[in-house]
Amino acid sequence: MTRVIYVNGRYLPYHDAKVHVEDRGFQLADAVYEVIEVSDNSLVDATRHLTRLWRSLSELSISPPMSEPALRHVMGQTIRRNRVRNGLVYLQVSRGESPRDFLFPDPPVPPTLVCLARATIPAQVDQRAETGIHIITMPETRWKRCDIKTVMLLPACLAKQQAHAQSASEAWFVDAEGLITEGASSNAWIVDRSGRLLTRPLDNTILPGITRRTVMDTAASLGLVVEESPFTVAEALDAAEAFITSATNTVMPVIMIDGQRISSGTPGPLCRQLRRSFARVAEHSPVGYVPSKLENQAFAP
Ligand code: PMP
Image (cartoon, rainbow, N blue to C red):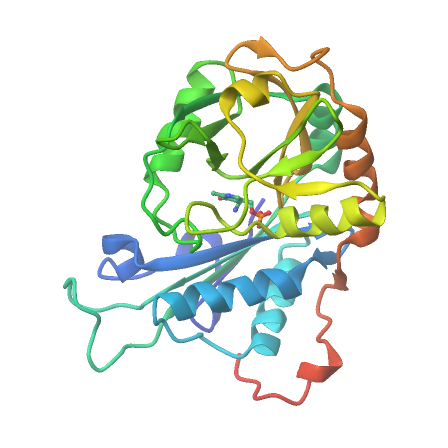
């Protein structure tokens, strides 16, 4: 249960946590976000997530709402006040509150920052990973800057809803060339029949997933070959293994695509190995911990 949410400098009871109706995040989806896993009282890959948040902000010319150490402090406080040991922390930064207009406010207004923390049950995610998930494919409907993590998530909502209606839990988007881009909220991977791990290279068509990056490091540590090259739906259907990566799932096996079983229809060995080894390779920062190189920077929570 979420008890307290941080909004613009204050930790508020859940039902009092509100932003203005003229917040640009609400009216125009002019906002970016991050989701970071909390595992056993540690933030997973926080440095990479915060680096990506700073990049998303910079791509949209939104000023960071505070310094990185201050933001880590807010996350730590929010996690602690909600007594989350395992779960996630969600950060959202919008361009701020201003009378509705397409143009950016001039002079700029202070960005809106929201931070919430929510508990999850790791055993439930592990159980799903034991079974594997079903996914569907559908034509890509999103814009051409999917590399920025914006809250403009309507295409993802529609895709997930359609997946749900077909008893699947994720949808993979397919571009005009018939190549899979990524999932509605995850990156897409296959293991081909010669044992190569394939995932689409980074460009404007996909989010540079933090879990994707750490899974690449995990694969390297296990001596596995990763090729950043795109693959078709037919190649995915013919693959030895398929899986998705995201902060809340880490590595999640896919056993069915569009109603067709992948290989034997059970989670594959490489996927299981990557899932088991992920925690060893990911960065774990104890909640409240501030890296020493950042300790002396301006601190303005
Ligand atoms: N792609 C999309 C479209 C996503 O929404 C997400 C999850 N935020 C991902 C990929 C996976 O990213 P990450 O590993 O950083 O959670």
